Amino acid sequence: MEPIENKENVLRKLPGVDRILELSKENGRYNDIPKSVLVNSIRFVIEELRAHIIKNEAPISIETQNILDRVRQKVEENMQPNLRRMVNGTGVVIHTNLGRSLLAKEAVAGIDEIAAAYSNLEFDISKGKRGLRYSAIEELLCQISGAEAGMAVNNNAAAVLLCLETMAKGKEVIVSRGELVEIGGSFRIPDVMAKSGGILREVGTTNRTHARDYEAAVAQNTGLLLKVHTSNYSVMGFTAEVSLKELVEIGAEHHLPVMEDLGSGTFVDFSKYGLAKEPTVQESVSTGVDVVTFSGDKLLGGPQAGLIVGKREIIEKIRKNPLTRALRIDKLTLAALERTLRLYRDPDHVVKAIPTLRMLTEPFEHIEKKAARLLRSLEKLEEPRLRVSTKNISSKTGGGSLPLLNLPSKCLELQIKNMTASRIEKAMRANDPPIIGRIEDDIFIIDLRTVLDDESSIICDAVTGILQKPGK
Image 1 (tube, rainbow, N blue to C red):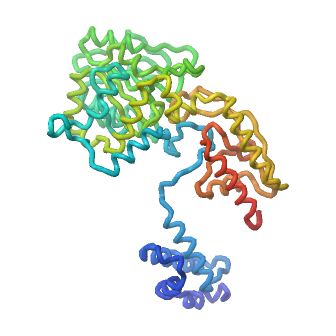
Image 2 (cartoon, one colour; image 1 turned 90 degrees about the vertical axis):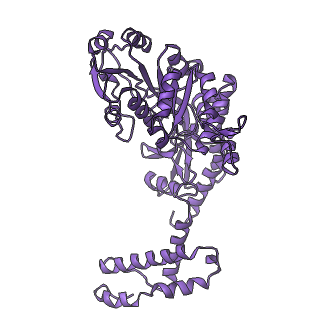
């Protein structure tokens, strides 16, 4: 290696792209690699080495074999899909960063069937002519929720935007100050309303809003009464709010439509399973509200979608809005959503069939047994550097749902001699598939509530791989 002060000489010795490409072709492992991937990887490595030399950083080998090794590593990175499976050991069931709700096997089968063939997406088989794509789910939505009509768009923010734009563009929308939530990613109800053309009219205070506040705010330009379920936070203590039933009564008195954004939205009464009570879509619809919006990939346990149910007259207007086409869902989402909704026709089976519901309601004893099995598997490695144990911990719902709910769970504590918790975390994240846990009290932990039954072996293999690496 040339001295740092002779970097010009070192730069001149760097082989060109063509030379490395020629050498790489002699290696059979690149036969199935697209030439564009190989060339781009070579260029990246050479440019990286050139930048390193120019910056006068520590000496680095520019031997041909070193370059080929770097190219091989870069090719492997480039051939990996960007969207990959991961093991969720965080204990957050509806983890937005990790894809939110897992789909039921029936929903996955539906995607597979519809993706691989033509379908009646917008074709009425009985009439032999063009049909409506919402017909695949509308009857199911109505059966489950009790609503007159229903449809779906690409997410709940879109559903809220579409409903507000249809029902209250250029008019005032009355909403409690305590319900002006931020729904994640800096998307806020006031911002969505501004985009819809609705005019925000706040009433009440952060912690207390009364029926008289809505009554006093109704004016000639009022277009809608809006209630937003604060599913991602809770105000405690000296509070008061107007129920949806009361708001519907106020709306009827003043001939104004009423809309509720349930946010997460659920068809299941979680209080039956010893969890916190969350208002169901059925309960909202039963009040006579005109429109209800909610998410498909949170407590519902389906694909990303924004569901809209309510009075037929208003749903028809929403369908005719030009924005509806821009926000519509594709056939794969529709297939998954239909299969998910079909599961809700059997209330006793749905909690076991949909992964999100199953994880949320899984008894502590089941998780404890899963943790014990994983612990025994790791102890069988008989590795003196490895220290593993289990302890009680709390899991979270996630996805802005049930924020106060702490789910009793069991976690695995993982420690390796001469490795910090952050190094273990990084190594687990570098596994294929990546394993995502968290660090508590300077110990890397894996919450077993969100680890699938067939993923324990992945964790064992990852730990084994870390222990076998040189320098670990």
